[in-house]
Length: 55
Image 1 (cartoon, one colour):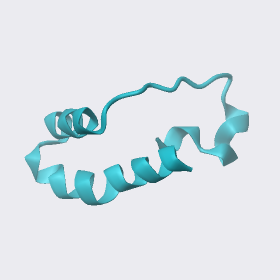
Image 2 (cartoon, rainbow, N blue to C red):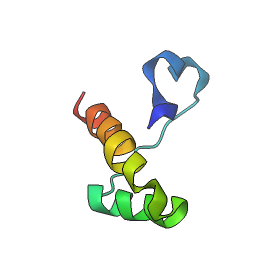
Image 3 (cartoon, rainbow, N blue to C red):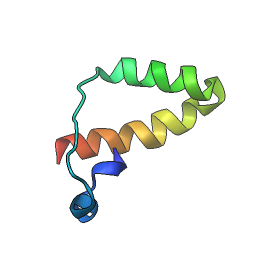
Image 4 (cartoon, rainbow, N blue to C red):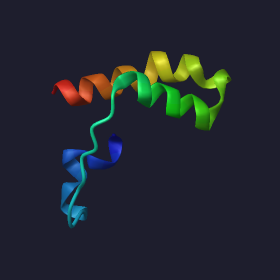
């Protein structure tokens, strides 16, 4: 999410947007980071991703 910030755009040749359902993003994140990361995912990353997509 944060790699495509507007203030960094001049550093990219192109960007790719990938659509993925919210529940699948959480599932993949927990697969990678482990169940102990659920709090971070649900109360940090997911909230920031939702905000990014909305704005």
